[in-house]
Amino acid sequence: MIKSNSLLLCICRSPPISHAENHLVLYSLRHPKVSNRGVEVDNQFGKEQRLKVGRAVGLFVPSQKFVTYSDGSSGFAPTTDLDHFKCYSVKGESVKQMVQLGDELIKMTPAGVYAPSMLCNPVVKVHATDGSTAVRTNIQNPDDHLVCYKVRMAQSTHEVMFHNQFEPERTTVIEGPNLLCVPSLKRHLTDGNGGKGGRGGG
Image 1 (cartoon, helix red, strand yellow):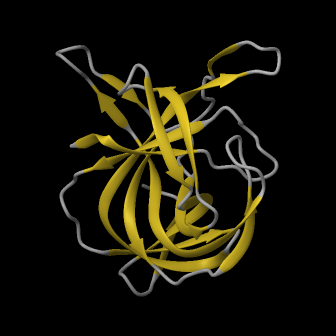
Image 2 (cartoon, helix red, strand yellow; image 1 turned 60 degrees about the horizontal axis):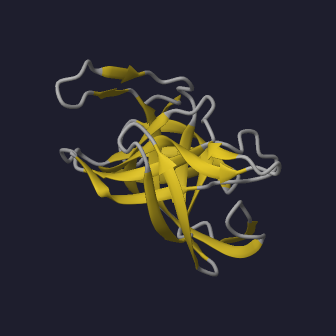
Image 3 (cartoon, helix red, strand yellow; image 1 turned 45 degrees about the vertical axis):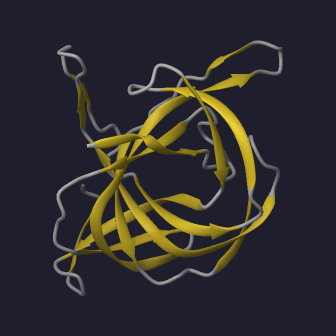
């Protein structure tokens, strides 16, 4: 079950920005509990970071954000080559690193990056409402994963408008940021402690 009243607009940026129009909205997800699994991830904060993976907690949905362009025109910017992501709670060691973060809502600002919070895998989504024909969204980039870390930085509040497959148009106030999601490579461990498996996967 997806809780539509609980969301996070992810405007994740790091230079160079390859797809500035891409945005994700995170919806809370209720899913049967699974046994803890172990994975290793590599990203800009380090190699062979070990994570213990818990319950599925969220679904990242590609979303179009309303923008005003430099020529004065405005509209919902389409996303490009962007998957849905199913996110799981994780536990792991804090990376304890300082970065500078800046996007369309905030200027470059110092931020502390700490413990991992979620591991997000690309996922196939089948969606049907009110008896309509189900729409299947396949995975485009199976090796792309996100690891989301808790961050501490100056907080701000912004009003944004977006739409996606769940909501034709929504205006909401977002606060934060409190998470930084970074592209990562993932390897399964045969158990929660050791024995390396293959890269990627769901």
